[in-house]
Image 1 (cartoon, one colour):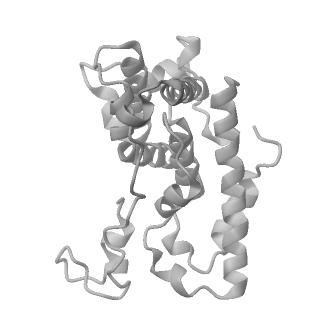
Image 2: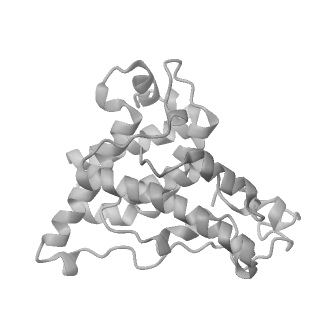
Length: 248
């Protein structure tokens, strides 16, 4: 793992933020950034930082001390993002924080679930980018991405491990049935694929004509709803007590 990245520092920064109720959890954010770094195109921080927030209303009037904390938080996240990008681009093994390992009991911890959730949300956001470069459903590249997404889905939702037509990848990881199914190795494989595909397209003569990366950053659909406004879903509750707590 990157020598300058500190998971305890990241958690501490999030917990001391004056607007921490609007910020995603540390492991959710790490999962999201790992998926973003895996993309077959360059996703800049200005594009992925909006994914960090449940509600960005509080960011508009930050005082100087809080803004400094935010800068420290973003700096820590940039360290992880840069680490993932370096691993994938240089084909080096990604090493996840120890608490994100799946043990021999095959029980997925809450922190791993949060990591998987963040990974899945960012992956869905990047679907069109991936489809541009691996349109064939039966290709090895498509199979690899599918295996990663199914694994993360099974980490996030335990009931997905019990489907008759789908292997229990979490159990395979726990039992070390196949070496490549170690979680960080599986994520590394997809990240390396994304980096290789991006390099191939960037070098191709038709790159600018055929491949269009993300043009618009993620936008919170509830960004104009105040925290104390009635929730748009019609529940009768305030927004901050209802849909602001749900996954976007």
